[in-house]
Structure formats: C-alpha cells, structure tokens
Length: 487
Image (cartoon, rainbow, N blue to C red; front, top):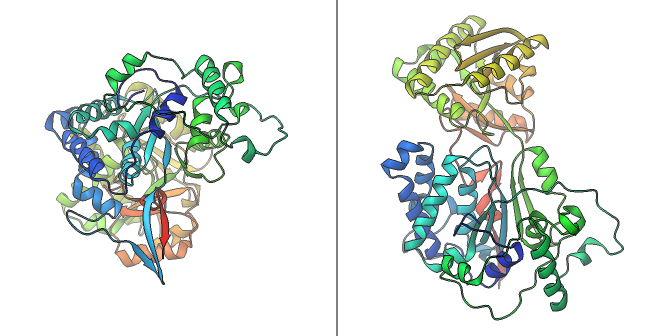
C-alpha cells in the first residue's frame, strides 16, 4: 500500500475495506476539497523547485480547473441532469475503477485518478515500483493532505504497488467465463480468503492494530463482502493462486490501462466481469509541424518562446511521453525549410541549456546508435549533432518518419510542400500534433481530411503535455460515470 498509508495488505482485505466504505457522489464536495488541497501543496515553491513538472499538475488540481475539466457545477450552481426527449438522466459513479499507471510518466496516474475520484468512484491505482521521485513527492503530499480531509477519502481511494506475474496460457474450463466470475458462496469466499492470504505474493497479513493505526476512519465490518472471482490460471502465483491484477480486474467495474502495447495485451489476459469495461491507452507517437516562413518572420522573442515550449514538450519526460514530438515536419520551399530548421535547432539548444537539462553519456551513445541506424537503413540523408543534448536526423521522405523512441533529444525532420500532405503520413497510432504558424481553419481541414485515421490532439507547441478531460479521443468523465434514466 502506498496510499492512504504505507504497509503490506492482502488484496482481498483491500477489496473488502473499500466495499464497506461510504459511497461518494458525482462531484462530491469531500473529494473536491481534498484534491484542491493536494493541488495547493503541489504548487508550493519548495515543491516546484525540486520537481518543476508538478506545477502543471498542481494547476490542474485547482478547484475551478477540476470543475471545468469534469463538467461539474461551480460553487453554488445547481446540479443539472441531462435531458434527451422525454427522459431525464442522472449521472452516477461507475463503481470501482482499477488504474494501471505507466512507469515512464510519473504524474499521469494523478490526472486519471483525480477525474475518476471526482466522478464519485472508488479507485485502486497500481503504481509501478519503478516510479521516480516525482511520484514519491506526490504520494507524500497526498498522505499529508489526509490530515485535513474527510475520512471518506482514505476509505475509498487506494494506491498500491506489486510485482506483475506473467500470464500463463489459459486452460480449458467446463464452465464459461461468466460462470467462473459469478459471486461465490459465503463458504467459498472464506476458503478463498484463506488460500489467497497464504499464497499470493501481494497478500501479506498485518495485525488489526497496525491497520487501525493507519486507517482511523475505518468502520467495524458487519459481514463478509462477496467479489467476483478471477480465473486463477490467467496469472498463477504459488499454488496457482490468482495474482493481484487478476483479482482487481475481476472485481472492478472499469479498468484503465496506461502503458505500451505489450502492457495492454498482458493486462487484457485477465478477464473482467461481464458488465465491466476496458479503457486502454497504449503506445502512441506524436510530432510537430512548423510553417517555415512563419518561423523566419517571427520576432526573436517569439522564436525563443516556441523553442522553449518545444523543449518542455520533448525533454521533460525524456521524450518518452506519448505526446512528446519525435518528428518535426517543415512546410515550405526547400530553401525556407533548410534555413528555418537550422535556426530552430540553434534556438532549441539554447532553450535546453537555459533550463540546465543535460543528457548523460549512456543516452548520448543511445542517440548516436539510433540516428546512424536510420542512416544505415537508408531512411536518412544526413545526421547532425549539437553536443549530447540534440540530434537531428534529416529524413529522405516524410513517409518514413519513425514511430519508435530514438533517445532523449533525437528529432527526425522532413519537408512538406503543404499541410495537406501530412494527411498521407498520419497513422492511427499517431496521437498529438503540435503546431506553429497555422490558422485554426487549416488545422481543422487537416483533421477532417484524416477522417479518423489518426491524431486525437492538435495543440500549439508547448502544450503537448497539457492534460485535458478528452484524452486519446476519449471523454474521461463520461467513461468514469454512468447515466441513470429517470422518467
């Protein structure tokens, strides 16, 4: 357990405690107050100095920003129900949401969890044990904020870490999965508790007194709570007991998976309850597009601001965020694009130096191997380096733009005669297009021309890492809730 306290806990005990907790409602004031307090603490100067990437998260957790993102009434505004025809719809929480957070972007789990909690859900977040210092700082602040929070926050929200068990091939079963996931009898439940507590890697018992000391808001249990049973063979631990991912997947109403394609496929091996839904955010690639003439005609101050924004987009998470640009497409004549690209590289190198960002020797070697590898594959005409922090790969054609990570500060470049040509390059895997020098009408025309083949976000350079309620084309508050028809 990482939140609300630190210590070992059995997965079945965790689910029982959460099932017995009081219920939240959509836009629950108790959660609003807690998230607002966490955001205020994240914006403190001492936190910003140690982890500047947390400033944007702190901004997102402001009350007004959260209410806007979740589409909630502000202040004393009356709550409205949606209407369609003669029907009235009341928005209610989805239930139990299980989040699998990525290891490469320390803060993304908070955005997902915060919106889900704000919609009134009970949440279990699986945080990677490899999460870095920023994640630890967030957890420390969240635990501190509990002192002033309503006890319902600690009762309904959990952040945990555990090792993954690789799934084994499924065995044949006489019963369909829907029957295997049915709620067990009381006798079966008691037996499963004993077996799981003694065999599961993440199920380490602790004393009742220890638990009470950490969770003062806990109410005495009044009876056993039943949960859907996982198919044990999907993720066997010792004695063929189901691992935590299988148990949490079977128990949840919505599973949210952040990670690479391999992670998504591995997690999806664990069946959900028949009514539950999956929401996956797999590997994505992103790029930037710049009108060469707009760059050449820009003032020095504008160029500096664009380069600084691009540096934030790319370097903040070592260019590993799904929305960080990997390729820069230049629109204009060959001469304009060549001159603009050289000027942009100089400004970018200065922006990185101003922020004090460096690239270590091992990463510099990685970048050179990747850059020269593209040249060896015949997809690059030239490779240019500006110290260890910046590598530029000039592509032979726009269509060979790489989608894989090439190392921090490695950018492919290609020229287009017009923005329309980008439509032939975009693939379904492409997520974010950052831009400079284009009117909104041009960008909207590109989105229409794509016809859903790719791109979920088109935002100005410097806004690639900004989180929004609509991510990868998914309206998260809508997915984190259900609509009850009342007529």
